[in-house]
Image 1 (cartoon, rainbow over the protein chains, first blue to last red):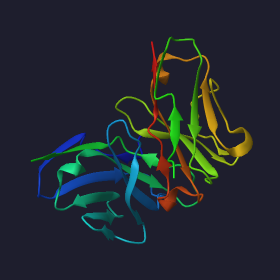
Image 2: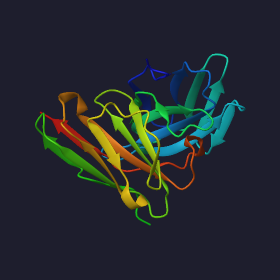
Image 3: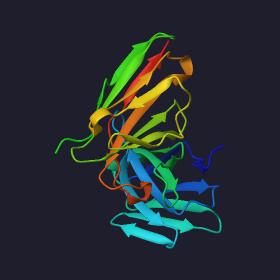
Amino acid sequence: DQQVKQNSPSLSVQEGRISILNCDYTNSMFDYFLWYKKYPAEGPTFLISISSIKDKNEDGRFTVFLNKSAKHLSLHIVPSQPGDSAVYFCAATRGGADGLTFGKGTHLIIQP
Amino acid sequence: EAGVTQFPSHSVIEKGQTVTLRCDPISGHDNLYWYRRVMGKEIKFLLHFVKESKQDESGMPNNRFLAERTGGTYSTLKVQPAELEDSGVYFCASSRIRGANTGELFFGEGSRLTVL
């Protein structure tokens, strides 16, 4: 039973426009959410995170929004750049846990 | 500073054989994790070491999988005997601070295992 869901396997966006990647979760015990970015033949790298006490966190071109009542979070990238083309994984955890629960990932393709 | 290194990058074995994957964490990182991604599915947590001690092995699929971290440095993950469903990419990660909510988890490039 998947606790973190990324329902879009892929997303294509034009360079310069906004990319919005979505993630839903089912476990109400999760209190910390992270986004990882992965290039082919590389390991995932940490991108941005948000605690459940916040509803927004921004870091440069990347903003994560959290809607706890809907158990939904999204990653906004603006403006999108060619180097943003990668697989993005949404992950969640709860206080004290050592492991992350990941979604299946969304392959973002930035079109020139 | 060297990142997390994993060996081999790709291993192809036949069902029933044994494979050992190795992970060298970033120097000074006491926390070492193993994750696995089966084709098209999510990345799943397998286990966590603090130094040489297993802290959480709740994600280990079954007793065909054995992870060790003798001396608290590098770690090995042995699959014996391998089954078809073990095929996937095995990621190792390390961190200086314990806790999945730190964002300070550094992943290796992964070891791809193909079981025929």
